[in-house]
Amino acid sequence: MTDASIDAQFPITERNRVRREHFRGGYEKEAVYAVLDAAPLCHVGYVIDGAPYVTPTMHWRQGNRLYWHGSSASRFLRAAQDMPVCLTASMMDGYVMARSAYNHSVNYRSVMTFGTARKIESETEATEALRLFVEGVFPGRWDSLRPMTSQELKATTVLSMEIESASVKIRTGGPGDPEEHEVPVWAGVIPMKTTLDKAEPAEELPPGCALPDYLADLIASGRLR
Image 1: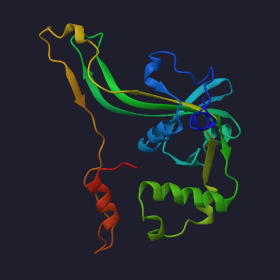
Image 2 (image 1 turned 90 degrees about the vertical axis):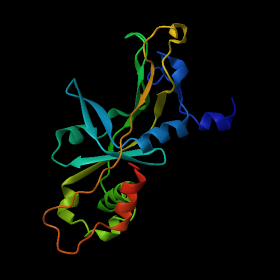
Image 3 (image 1 turned 180 degrees about the vertical axis):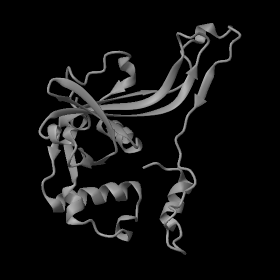
Image 4 (image 1 turned 120 degrees about the horizontal axis):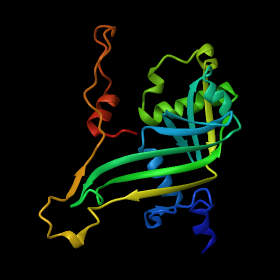
């Protein structure tokens, strides 16, 4: 294995090794990043006072670093600082209908990442991280918003995590029961998609405040991230 190929994938450890159906797994950084960037939601796992907790939140990525944020009053975010965490993200792409209940499955993309959560202490750095978050989801929106206040920044905690190890697992294709093709039961894939729908304006909008083109274009594209 060359140095370039080693650098292109995460190290395989006992923690991130894909064991079951390992042929669907991988450790390539670009494959991991692709799922992280496509998924609108992640789940962050912590161990606090000896008990496990998993919290759903939105995330964003810059290079090999992940970010998420929440209320400064959150005990999960306060406890997570400098703590090893596991952040996962997944997308369901379809129901796989087989000829037996046992062979039913789903098509999916999922990642599991590991690292140490760090709080961003600098208000300037936190503001820039939040700007990248908003712009990553809604390109062109940040500059149209009023600036964040100092109090809002104090009320917001931004955590980041350098990805130390990770794995990706993906299933595609139809049912894995070709030997049962003569069984008279419909089999195949029912695709699943998550899309953006028609915008619903707030009741308090000033007259003439129309949906901006960049949001209309985003909805029309169906792109989640």
